[in-house]
Image (cartoon, rainbow, N blue to C red; front, top):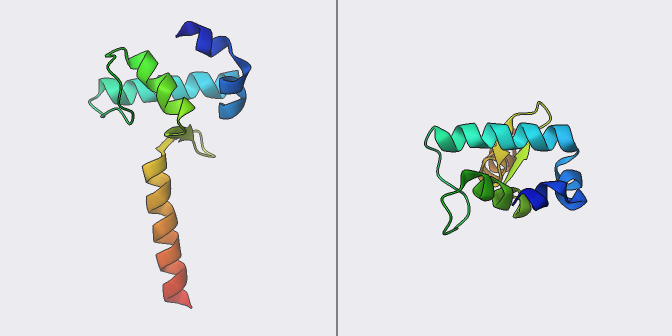
Length: 88
């Protein structure tokens, strides 16, 4: 698990070490507050869950460094598309 944090691909995927640390911390807070994991894993280790969510592109930081899930993005895109179609 900790070896994954040393690999450059996960650091580059998120946009750097600082963003990786921020993303992990925010997601761990969400999981500890009762958020459900976005990946199916047999492990109860929350750090492993967060790393797998990152690898599977389930979570990311938006431009204001807020935690987002791919489901959030889909909702935002659909909302934007609906707004744009109403304006046309």
